[in-house]
Length: 116
Image 1 (cartoon, one colour):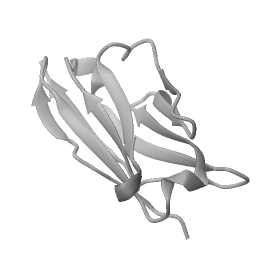
Image 2 (cartoon, rainbow, N blue to C red; image 1 turned 90 degrees about the vertical axis):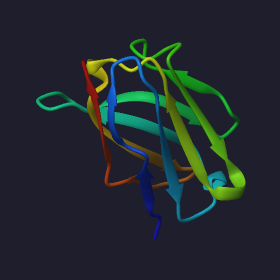
Image 3 (cartoon, rainbow, N blue to C red; image 1 turned 180 degrees about the vertical axis):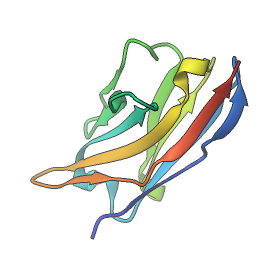
């Protein structure tokens, strides 16, 4: 059973920084991609950042230049460093992992609130 657990959410002022972590219960080499999504109240869940197995990273236009996705194999963990946060970044952030052959896994989410 694959489990993902996010941590690091919280309350921060606009312009501040916050780092999120997503710890997997299995080797992250098991996954084709690992992503961060977010969902704000009343809005659809959107892809924020993705890192592929070969290390390619992709970002939503709204976070390019401010957010950075990275990973640490030894800890089976993917990170999302968020800088220059804006109130519109307020959302529940979810970790997602897609298996190499099958499987699509989600963490329970962590709340990020950016005050103006």
